Image (cartoon, rainbow, N blue to C red; front, side, top):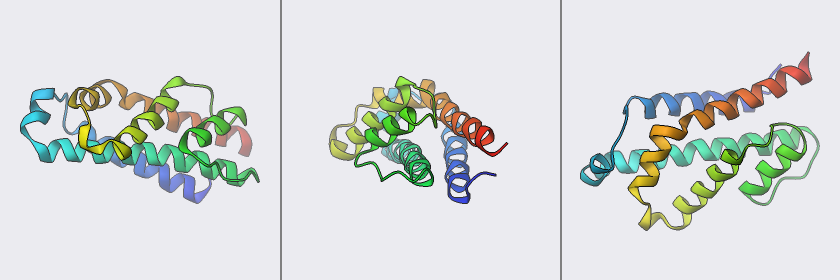
Length: 139
């Protein structure tokens, strides 16, 4: 049975993915011309990455491990503990989040376009990887 907090986080992930997909394929020009859409995309992508980090932290906690000190550490330790398979995309997610949080005044629209148009599947893959781990450990 899946942990309630993890289930809630993964449900949030799915809801945000649905919201982002309602935009369809976005363009740099679209984000250049519509600051509201740009800010919504930035925020939703940040939320997705926060969910990834939070789920990794929760998996560590459930395994009796101490909390990770950074998002990258949370993902790295989740991989090393066998909760999720190694995937460079998961580390790039955290890198993106750090960039948005710490360099928020200079987020390149091309990065946002690439994330929405090509990388949302990485978040689905993360969800599926977590669910596969949960199924294996509860069978």
